[in-house]
Image (cartoon, rainbow, N blue to C red; front, top):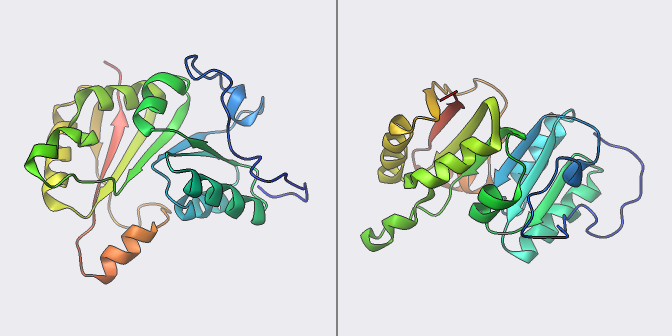
Length: 207
């Protein structure tokens, strides 16, 4: 979705007026309705930009806690003339659980999060936390999808087991080339290093 509108610096960045009040749908992309995809931990925004360019009829919100990366997302989107991208500087878990409108997202992406490989840190793994999976399910519309990728084999097994036990999702097949899905920088890097990339595609179900 492109136009010739001149953007002010970083005006694609969201600044919630009240961090203790859940956003309304209009707070993110205005009154126009379009399918919403949320990228948790969006990094420098290359995945977000590629998806937004390929799917101009959808809106894309990137959540990232580091200011420099948020600004990169905004600059890159502005240069590309993308009006279907927004960036929010915040911890993903807080945004999902407390800030974003429930039942608003058609797809949520969690790509190559920290696998926390040390045993003493395993409790920090998002995909192993039932409360996080419940929050993502609450964010999704009925029939929405949650997509996860990692190069860490043990974390993938933990995530798959948690997903299979979770009452809010069904695990779907995700064959390669099933649909357009942009690669992240991490994915390209890990593939070049010969690492195996694995993904989960989860469908929200009624409970």
